[in-house]
Image 1 (spheres, rainbow, N blue to C red):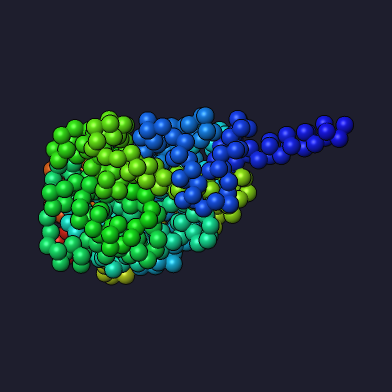
Image 2 (image 1 turned 90 degrees about the vertical axis):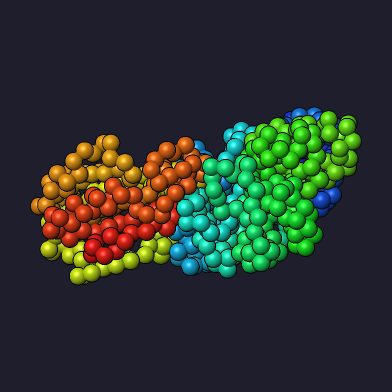
Length: 545
């Protein structure tokens, strides 16, 4: 009987030890592998894993969609997640904070750090829920490795992705990017709360339409004074754990396999010790578009030799098997890359018993919590800029206003409110909805889109539409731009736009025409401008109060 009790106790211990944060081990023999031992350092554990892998398995682990290795109990993991201003692209309902360019306008690093901390809290809740429901199957946009922040310098105001950045100033970008990184990753001495990624390294401020082919050359002064300070700050001072090279070439070499950027600066001068992921399709660009490598094996070997550990979006890194066989790269170099990837997963606590990290108990109740929603609202308030207020029109006096017209292409547009690289909250409050809610029952609200952002195919007689609003006490025109026409590598063929970028910084002429018609009604006009990038408004600045 005593022997049976002993055996039963051992079986219970094995069963308990098999429950790991990140997956459930179904083969109890896996407990004998040393990489499961939490007392070893992440580097030691990563080395133990790689010893057990075939070359084919190593290459597959270097894709963003790393497959499971069932014989070792290692679950599949998708490295690609986003959290530019709140957890992004997840099927869960989450808190959406102001777009990055708006958060930069707060000039408040403490607020940004809190936002990032709240974001990684919601990210942990989503990750934990997947672990609980799916036994460790972590799909895209639900892991703990976030490819953000975008700390490129918004050098050209026509760049469609400038909205994702903290603006044109290297110092402000350094401060805010560092605050974001520290807030997202946490300060636990053993575990990362989440992993941040500094992108797109380096010398990238558009254009979007030819980013897969162009070569950029800048002076050494501009390189170090403009484009590198924020990256150095995040790598050296904030301890960012990932870096993403840009699509373009710099000084003739692709960013992901660049002697100056990668070998000399990132690893040599700055001593970076995290992992590097390619942008999605960038390794393919090396042989397909930049033509700096003749084929997949050469491109894969070159990128790995320069310290790019993950190939996102394609399968070029699977050709590392052939590259090793052809002598283009030593298998030991592949080992180093795979070790770095597993080290990151160990630092995130993915293979340790449930309860090991301080965040294993976070549940989905934190998603869209009142504290998070209140902070998002406060950041939005701090980001808004009042450019002009002639005649004391604002704030509106409810004792004198009985009818408000809220018009324009962004008046009731949820897409513009959410920007890009966004999550989806339960409720999205447009300008129209917000004004209607604040006005209450005593004030009539009328609305009409009245114009498109750029063309006028839908609205043939703007002047007549404007005249129909002449009985309103005040007209609020909500215009500007939208992520539907400016953003990342877009197929937009409108006047003044190309591939997501703009060819002019002027407010589109149709909007100026519309506001001229509104002004002709003789009623006060308020122009609310929503935009990711700078817009020139010469007529509006002179004529709209």
